[in-house]
Amino acid sequence: MLFNTLPFAYLVIITFGLYYLPIFKRIQLQVLVGASFVFYAWNFPILLLLLITSILLNAAGSYGVIHAANSKRQRAIATGSVIINLLILAIFKYAGLLGKTFFSENRELVDFLIAIPLPVGISFFTFQGISLVVDTFRHDSQIRNEKQVNSSFWKHLCNTSLFISLFPQLVAGPIVKAHDFFPQIKPKLLKNIDWDFVFTNLVIGYFLKMVVADNLKDFTFELTWPYFERLSSLHLIALLFAYSIQIFADFAGYSLIAIGLSQLFGYRIPQNFNFPYIATSFADFWRRWHISLSSFLKEYLYIPLGGNRKGRVRTYLNLMAVMALGGLWHGAAWSYMIWGTTHGVLLAVERLLKDITEILGAKKSKLTGLQSKIAIFLKTTMVFVLVSLAWLLFKLPDFKHVLAFFTALGNNQHIFTNYLTLVVIFLYSLPVVIYHLYYLYPIKNEHAVRNILKPVSLACMLALLLLNSGSPQDFIYFQF
Image 1 (cartoon, rainbow, N blue to C red):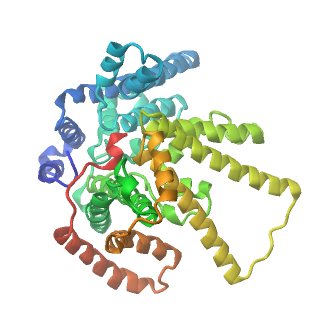
Image 2: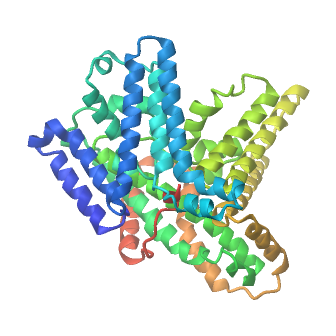
Image 3: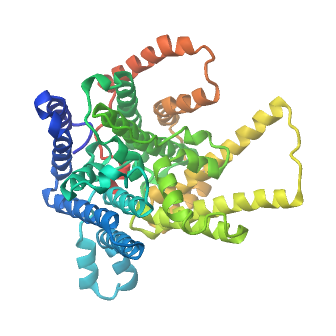
């Protein structure tokens, strides 16, 4: 069920009405869980069984950890639950990839493995289930409180069901950690809704998705083989820039909608984007892009591997390993792993250069105001260009097509360029450019922003939503 369809609007309206009715006050949680199940089962009802399986597995695992007789038994239950989560993810997401890679001669087996469906959102709700089990094992005070320890399994199951299935962020995040979410599970009141927060996030989110991303997709479809081979080099550069803008607008738009809708029902979920395309380093980029995934990988993988506590070489290896696995998490193709490994190498090289500078004791040269601005501009441009080039592996999962793209980029300078198309691409990209520039050069008069520019901007976005929305398409991150 897409966020930008009438069935979804009806689901939200009906759920909202029931949720805040006084007679349903005592079963608010169950109302929201029921709506989440309807949302997930809308197109493929059979896949609801997998979601329910995940909920039961992680509810039983975390409850078992809470009530285990000793630490050895706790560890065994937690480890077993995490392994089962990962096995389920591997079967449904990576069976086809592993079959094609290791059993290519057995055509029947490969066809069977490829036919296994990829449930939408499985990567996201699996990670949240793992978060619940691990946080419980770590004796997190927000989950293993006295009330939770003494609660019935039924209550714990209801809480787990809401945590894993909350429909605004169920299929594409942001990824929510158990220790952040569980303390919020309590009765909600209509009067406590932050309507300005909800409205702002929904309008900006829908605008980014329906006006920016859905219109740009009509141009970036040419960024696939063999269409790009007939385009000029300048056109290819424009399309690569447009795809960078599209993937940001698409995913950031989804995240903002999810954040706004969750607040409508009284739940705060984490910010997922923080002006990523003004990052001056790759570490800075990953502090700004898909923040919930970055923080999850850091907390549940990078730090347990040793983080930066095991020496410099181990730090570089940890960065590359975590990013490689993070890339593979995005999709069942080796190109995604190459994408993640590329970012891991860039992060490791960046860290290496920083370490060399510290070892040599080199002092930073003092730059004038203009020199500093030029340096920041050059760093930001370099990061954006390399990140954009890496996005090719998202758009072109077949590595041969990536190489073909670079061949066309180098050979097609002589082909005619339709400059009108480039102008239209830039106009649809302009809101995201302005969005990032506003962060770099904020208006000092906050009163004017709050009382004049913000209402005007939201009104313009609403008008464009009504007049210039693109044709609906699934969110890009639904495939993950």
